[in-house]
Amino acid sequence: MPSASYWAAELKALRIDGPRLIAGVDEAGRGPLAGPVVAAAVILHPRQGFKGLNDSKQVSPRNRERLFDEIHAQALCCSIGQASVEEIDQLNILQATLLAMQRAVAGLRLRPQHVLVDGNRAPALPMRVDTIVQGDAKVAAISAASILAKVHRDRWCLELHARHPGYGFDVHKGYPTPAHLAALRAQGACSEHRRSFAPVRAALQGAGA
Image (tube, rainbow, N blue to C red; front, side):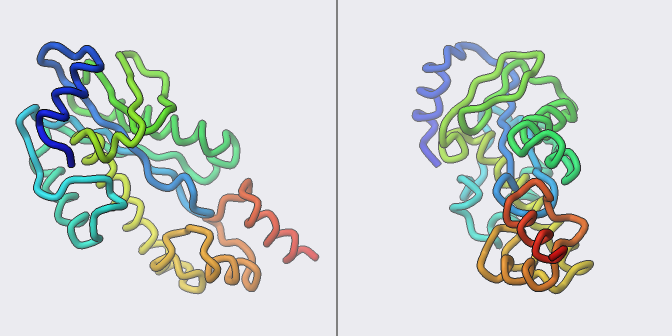
């Protein structure tokens, strides 16, 4: 995670020149073949810090779990929103992701004056929104949101594995690994697979044949 001076420079570049409630937003689960897409929104105190905070993909599972609990306990407020498999199939994954982000921001106990979103696409919101490419590695609030979204979805995948143990959701978390694709070909799709994704459609067509 960059230093406080780097974060100050990011704020200056975005012309954030006074105290305000800033929410960081990030998502998890755009690429998997199954399950909801999850977004998180986090408002941190301007002087708040968490040891080891970074892009969730750069943090070990053990530290992600620790940070998940610390963020929930110490952030000014945080919220998780998601879009279901049915919404993903109906809307497409990008629009479902933006919907999950809207729900995450709407669920915050405090209304932010400014929202910073990881990446280059942002949902429509009733306050100022800016996107930051690789924001989960640059901005503390976005990093915190990345951790919350990732851990929440990974825990959901463990629950899914308990219901459908033959697919290996506890290992690949729904991503299209060779083992997951092999299970799809052998067993077909379960209720939580995204029918609009090509590998799932192919598995269903093969099962029908």
